[in-house]
Length: 188
Image 1 (cartoon, rainbow, N blue to C red):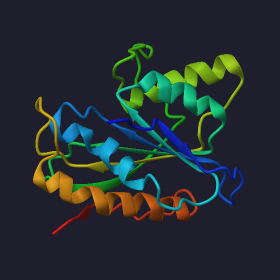
Image 2: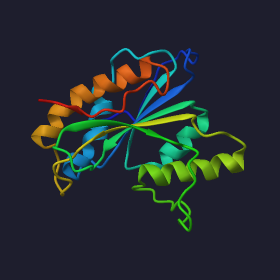
Image 3: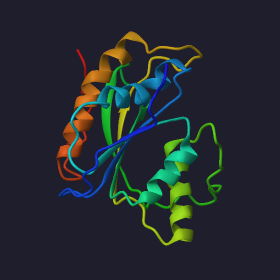
């Protein structure tokens, strides 16, 4: 089955600046494939002007380099384990300029997997060298996983959360950055 790495909407200007929606996760680790599935669900749906989609999968380095293209806003879609019932969807506001903790190692280049925090550290390092800037607004639409054990396919509660999460992502990118209530959304 052929997949598309990214889909671009050719209208670069919007009232909120350019936005990248990136699905993150490993489709071979059960529910960890949630972000990839949610972004695939958005493929072919009408997006606001200036919004691009990227199936980043486990290619954190590719995501870091893609962010050099000057996005003002980044929406990451991924699993987030917060101990809630599986399928609970969160919106998390992230400070992209937040300094890593004291003594944190520099971002480790790993062509097959980097967590979102490592990607943002790498982007910061790359932008500092290239004279660019980080996205001003970073949000994570995260889903509580049931299992991230080896295997293809999402668990029932996480699969049921894909559609509502995709709708939530569209709602977020239609609003000004930062206009989110921060509540968890649970499919019943």
